[in-house]
Length: 339
Image (tube, rainbow, N blue to C red; front, side, top):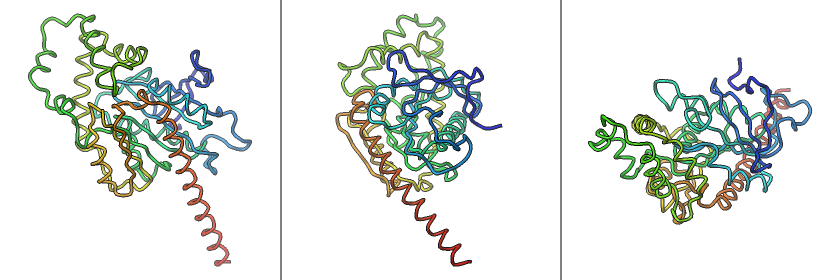
């Protein structure tokens, strides 16, 4: 059995009602059913002779976009629209436990997310040179995938990945201080409307560089994750577990592929110092600091971020093609010498 399967219904991805350039479908990766947003030529447009699971020369670069904690593939919709207009193939997926994906199983979270990410990468590598880009938790998963030399990844863009020099808020969640413990143990639950009201005030401040320009639809999408007291406490416990796992999340000396580190000056969750630290730990990486971006630049500035991702992916794909060509010439020369 392969790690990647189409949804059992067999229904193909269909154009999105609000943006026909984006196709929406459902697939299974590493046994987890999830939703996929996709732009670019559909898989049926492969040249004759190209079959899923058969490794051949990639067609072009393909971006795989991973979202952050308590987010979903929808966070990438504005960027996907830009990539579609530029003709850059890309997919965004709901990570397990978020969006419309199936729930995470009990136990460590990062290994489950690793298996899921690896399955997505392997599927997409059949269609082209894979460049992985992730925001926040997605940035962590991109870095962890880059640490695995067996995965066919040509390059990685890590945006605001946590676990290096984090903000007071992430440190607060990790330490689980008295106010949070009291909230989780209240004998009477906080009314749902109050939870949603507080979330509606906090989300724009935490995710955007300027909360005044926050998109109402995106804010509502986040606040729907906290419909009541019970869901909020569950997410808090999950966040505490995840922050704990981040302590042992990285083995950056194993990262050999091109890495672009994006740090955001107005990020209130993961400071720009975290990006500088990551860049210092991976000497061959490149660092971009945007002082005007917040924690989710795909929401702040999808036009420029889309251009950045497309440019990086094209450069990585070109480098990958040159590397493959050199290897082929070297192999041919060896066979000639042996003959």
